Structures are given as C-alpha cells and as structure tokens.
Length: 389
Image (cartoon, rainbow, N blue to C red):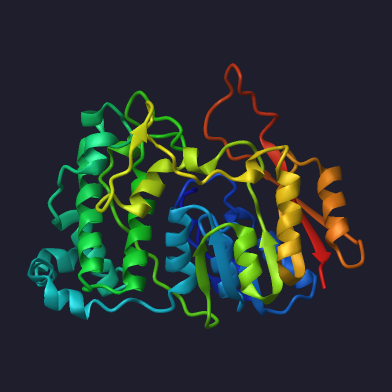
C-alpha cells in the first residue's frame, strides 16, 4: 500500500486515483502503462474482470476509463476497497444517520467541526470522517488489547489503536442498525483501513512491527474518504477465488490477471487490515503468534506456490469466457517466463502471445539483511496479451 498518488492522465482525461495503502504488487505507478497497452491493443471499453483486485487500483482505473468491472479477491479488505472504489457510484447520503444519531447531529452543528472541514471536498462525507476521527471518544477494544502496547505488540500507539476500535464500533453500529447504507459503510470502512495503514508502525507489511516508534506511527489517526465517481452500471465485487468468479461472470471483453508473484501469502502479510475489514463483533478472531496472525483464516493462495501456480493459471484461463486476457507478472516471479508463455500459448485461440514490458522501482518492505538480499532496485513488470476467443 503506497502513499496517495493522484491525477494520472488516462485517455485524454484526468482521472483522480488514490492508492492510500502500502501494498505488495500495487499497480498505481503502472496504470498509465496498463491503460496505454489496452488502448494500443484496440480494446474498446466493455465488461472486464479484475481477477486479483488487491487495493482495487486497476478496477477503479478501468471504471474511470468506461469499463464495467467485476472485481474479485480472496481478502476481505480487498472486497471493502472494491465496494468503495469500483461499485459505489455517488457520494453517500447521511440523512438517516443525522436523524438517528443525536451525538453526530450535535457535532455537525459545532462551529469547530464546521471550521475543520471548511474547504474540504466531500461535504457531509468529509464531516462524518472528521467526526469519527476527532470527536468520537477512543475506546479500549480488540485492536487496543491486541495490537498496541497493552497487548505487547507495537503495531499502533495505544491512542491510535483505541481510536480504531471506537471508529470500527461506530461503523458496525450504524450499518447494522440501518443508519447508513452499504455504499456509505464501505466508503468509510475503506478510509479507516487506509488511515490505520498510514499510522501503522511497520515497514510496509504487517508480518512484523518496528521495535521503536516511527514518526508516522506517532501521528494522530485521520480519515480521508475518497468521493465515489460514476462509472458504467453493473459493477460487482466478490470475495472469492478468481476462477470461481470467472465461471459466473459470463462473457466479458477482458480479464486482467495480476496474481501473487512469490511465496508470501497476503493473509499473513496483511492480517491487521483483514481484521479491521471483517470486524470482531460477532465472533472475535482467534490470534496466534508474536504478530497476532488469525488462526485458521483459510485464505491461502495456490499462486504463492511454485508447484501449484501453473495449474492455477491454467484453471483460470479455462474458466473465463473473456475474449482477451492480460496477465501481469514480475520478472522475479515463481513462474519462469518460459513456463508462463507456454501456458498462455496453450490457452490462446491462435497460440500467439504478445509481451509488453516496463521497468519500475522495486517495492521494498525492508532493507538488505542476512537471508534477504534484494537483486537491485529495479525490476520489470511483464504484461502478456492473448486472444481467448
């Protein structure tokens, strides 16, 4: 998950794209390359399946370019981003919330809160974010007990962890009581996951926390919700296996495949965003180990295994009814380029595979150390195109 990046120029228009999470494989910097390749191939906007959505950066870029997107991922936090950035079409209404929550109503009338959001985009959405981040009293809950100093884990300062607890509790109560609709819930929940990531005391992934407090971790938690933008009707989000979604998506013009490249399971590297996305109100997750991994999460991907990744690719290509497939892969991925191209050629209707390439700076979640030495700071993103029908 990387810091916010905005105003990528696509198709002659300015499209506001925010990728506010530090994330392995995030495609924000490569969006011009990806969208430019799609145009170069002459693919007109239609239905698309973003099969490994992650932070939904590609899904929302396709949405902005006129595509009707079905997105999918195994992780719950990805589903939240999909709902907030791909499915949601308009700024949420908070009329029912104002009517049903007297504390919020009083805060919104406060000159201090009004002054703090003056000039900000989003209107009522910005005001609700400010209320949650600054006016709701922190409370000791699941995050504060397990992922802050009280629990012996330094992922968040105690203050920020307690604020995450309070905000997540409010969102759960508002949503389950019908005071906010689905779009508002997912937009606000996405802003909480991103806000928590900005103050997380990590090097970028949650496999470990830092032994001392970083400067970003000492900052106060803040929420910055992205205003939903209109796109083609019928966008859908799925927390499911890519091949399963491909079988039900029907005929689409394009499937975009951006699978994990290495053996690092996202369920272990991003377990805290996953917990925030799921919540802990009906059945608190059982944690294990020094870092508080979720026991028995059942979200292991075959793509993170060198022995199984090839079969997973073949299954997905057989499952989709897409006319075109674009496959992003990394020059250091588990599948060799020879094996990858061979699998794609077998699936292509004419056996032809086009390859596009772009160099970029490596994502580094830590420094070189014993047992982990990076092979330089530059890697190549490989983008393959095949015709399936």
